[in-house]
Amino acid sequence: MKEDMDIDLMVIPGFWTATMKSEAEIVLGVKVDTKDGRKVGTMVTGRGESTSDSGGACEGGSIAIGEALEKALKQALSQMGEAISNSDRLRTALRGSGKKRS
Image (tube, rainbow, N blue to C red):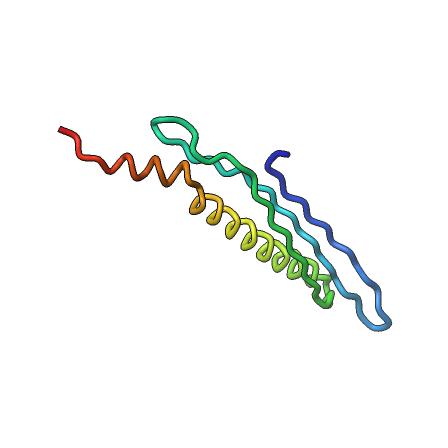
């Protein structure tokens, strides 16, 4: 798996207007290196969906995409924070770096 972003936009026709539905997926690589080497190396994924009325000039598509991406990014960044904060290797390395040097 590698870093990636995928966005799908679907137009759902209606009687008087259309609805725009967007699905977004973001895959991010998380790497934390210290002077002693890599302490965190993982991938996180976020997914989001949104729908919007199409609007007069189909501007609803950009609204649906923006909202879906916002949800996906929020989910991915939350997972990233958990991966960093729950890393025993990183916690141990940071504890060891606080030693006084003579």
